[in-house]
Image (cartoon, rainbow, N blue to C red; front, side, top):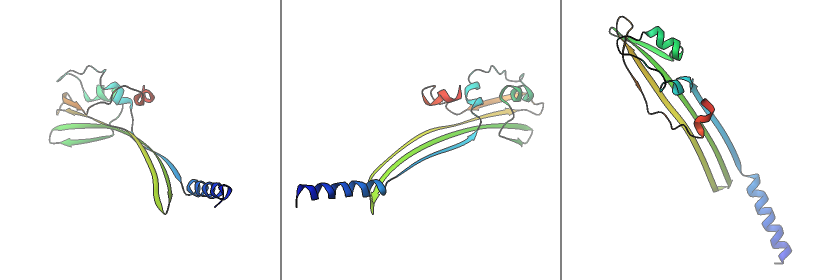
Length: 135
């Protein structure tokens, strides 16, 4: 086989691989990132801070529930970004995937008089390159 035929064959093989390749980028977002950045800054006082003060600070909760005499506010935020590159022809030759994800929740609980009993937040993501979008 001549070198010209080998080069043409290689070029056709590369062209077929590129033709059969795919790239996807997806973004999944739920909730508001505002509370993620504000949860560390607020100074709530147990037994003194009211449900209205929390709602004025963070906005309305994503969900709320009554559990007995307690009122629970739930704030949620999730942001997941995925990029994927696949080269294939019949079988996958090459596959690369990258995922960046922020998933956080804040629970605030009030007594029957709507005074703060306790609050808890899941581990907040580091304030690095990914979190710059939410400041």
